[in-house]
Length: 255
Picture: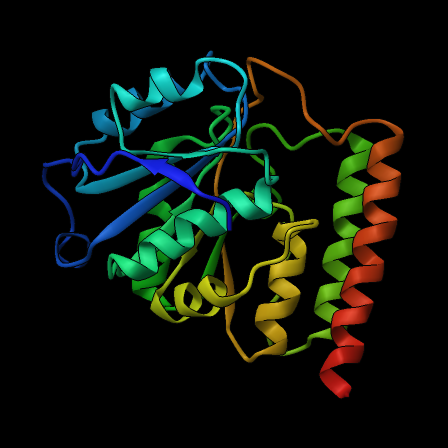
């Protein structure tokens, strides 16, 4: 992990919450790369929920003013070079582990994840705890669900995970970047986290190790600023490579 600059100013939000939320320390990890146009509004939305969340924005070597905008509202871990989403997320997970948080919840810095849905993840965990709880776009098919090509690829990746790692949990949205980790998952991923295709591959690693995975329907939004790094023909390449990594994870389980 590369060096980072970290402002430790506390941004715990105050307000009414269900008892299990009040009794827990919850860290929202927000990986960002050149999200100056959206991160401020997202942090304001999080504050407006009135929930007792702590936030950590991980600026993954941005060349814009992401850190400056975010630091006015949240602690920021500023990476000195771009590590990619896997490195940025693990930075937040390591921080959650060292600071003894009960839950670490990943949400994207581009505004696609509605902060009001964070409580949906927590409610699902309270009803049926799993080590990883995914916010899925495809259970209710509400809100923005990506392009047809990407949805087809996601279905294939989900089928591979559900087939090769039976017992880990039924997954419909393995590429969702909105997910809750409990203490066991935090400890597991603080030690190792995939740098390539982290969302689906982290699920393969977790299920291979016996961690449980659950899902809950959430409604996501289309990003208003910037562009996705996985579009067009890149979606096909992404799918093929992810399927290969999942198969390797399964083979490693047998060895």
